[in-house]
Image (cartoon, rainbow, N blue to C red; front, side, top):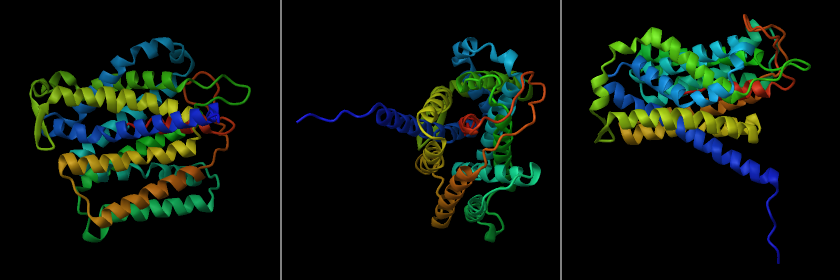
Amino acid sequence: MHATKPSPASSGRSTGLTLALVSALAFGGSGPAAKPLINAGLDPLHVTWLRVAGAALVLLPLAWRHRDLVRRRPALLAGFGLLAVAGVQACYFAAISRIPVGVALLVEYLAPALVLGWVRFVQRRPVSRAAGVGVVLAVGGLACVVEIWAGFGFDPVGLLLALGAACCQVGYFVLSDHGTASSGGPAAPDPLGVIAYGLLFGALVLTAVARPWEMAWQVLGGRAEIGGAQVPAVALLAWIVVVATVTAYLTGVISVRRLSPQVAGVVACLEAVVATVLAWVLLGERLSAVQVLGGAVVLVGAFIAQRAAPAAPSAGPVAGGGAPSGAGGTGDEGTRLSRDASAS
C-alpha cells in the first residue's frame, strides 16, 4: 500500500496553523515578561521604547529591502507606527503596571467590537445582526471581567489605559482599510515592510516621548523577579524583543498569508488565554471563575464581531499618502495588517 501524500494546500494550511499558534504564544508572553521589568523600576514607557527600538533594529534589513514604501505610503507607515506600535504598546504596558495582564488584554480585545461602532455611526454603513450579537457578547463579557457589580474592582486608570490600547487598534483597523490597493490602483504594500517601518516610526515617536536618556539603565544590569525566581533583566528584555515582538510579528504575517483571516483570527484569540495563564503561573495574578467565563465571552464576541465586519470598499484617500488608496476588493489585506498590528 502506498501512503497518501498530503496536498500542497493541506501542507500549507498545517504550516499556517502552526505559525499562527507560535505567533499567539509569542505575543501572549510579552506582558508577563514586561511586568517584572516594570516592577524592578523601569517606567512602562521606557519598557515600550526598549521593545520597539530593539525590534526595529533587528528588522532593519527588512526596512532596507522595502525602502520604496517611504515614498509610496508614508501616511500608512506613520499611522502604523503611531497607533499599532507606539500607541497600542505604550497603553498596554502602562495598563499592566496597574491591573492584571489578563484583564488588560481582554479589555484590548474590545477592538473588533469598537471597529463596528466606527463603521455604523461614523461611516454610516450597515452592520449585520451577527455583528451586533458579537458586540453585546464582548461588552457583557467585559462587565464580568472587571466585576462591574462590585464598583470596578480594578484601578480605573489602568482600565482606561487598556481601553486606550483598544482604541489605538481601532485607529489602525480604519487606517489599514484605506491603505490597501484598490482595483486598478497600485499594489498593496508588503505587510513585512509595513511592520519594519512601523517599528522604526514608532521608535522615533517613542524616543521623543519616552526620553530614554532619562531611563534607569542600571535596572537592565540587575535582576527581576518572575515566578519566584530572580532572572537577569536583560534576558527578559531579549525575550520581549526577539520572541514577543520580532518572532510574533513575522510568524503572524506569514500565517495569515497561508490561512483565511477568519481562521487566523480564531488562533489569535489564544493570545489572551496564553497571557492570562502565564500571568497566573509566573506572576500569581489569579482570576475568579466568573472573570475567566467573562474572558471567554469577550473572545467569542470579538471573534463574531471580527467575522461580521463589512469589507466594502472605502473611497477616501489616506491624508498625505501621495498614492491613491482605498479598500481592496475583499478587505483581507487590511484585516491582515490590522491583526498583525496587535503588539500586546
